[in-house]
Image (cartoon, rainbow, N blue to C red; front, top):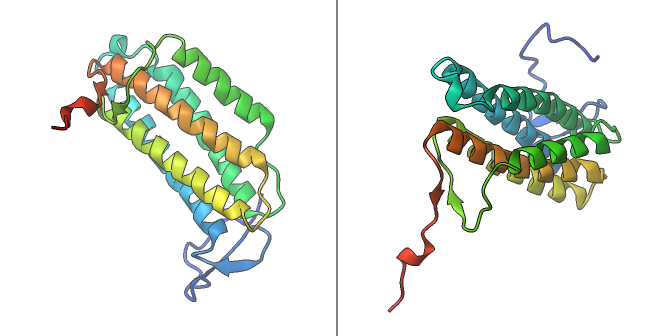
Length: 197
């Protein structure tokens, strides 16, 4: 484990630079900082989903039988996102493994098995927890794009990109499960509402 934070502000970043995990300094608007910063933002968004599920758990647990397992899954993902952030912050490190990606795929398949096939696009929403999960999904996609940008000019392991890709898919499925379980349901995008003359 690295240095413990005994002092929150250091003033070392006042010049617009920040320290990476290997001790080197880069600009705060570098592609590497953007990528792990967005992974941190994603982690916070997932924390909001967990908080929402915890807040509503006592209301009527029978309406959300998947809530506890989903909370546990999301908490494990938060730990993995810290690992991913560390991998992106320390050039050359390896923290995300194929097993992490396989675990996401297994959970995705298990949750998706009980959902009806999706034939149309759905609008983000479906209750507070589902809406927050949709927001997390979009941040996961942005994190993926930023890691791809980083990989254009710096070494990035393919596992990092694959993890974020699978995670965004899993968050989409979790949002569907939460929307249906909450009683709000899913709102289908009505593309035919714009009929042309």
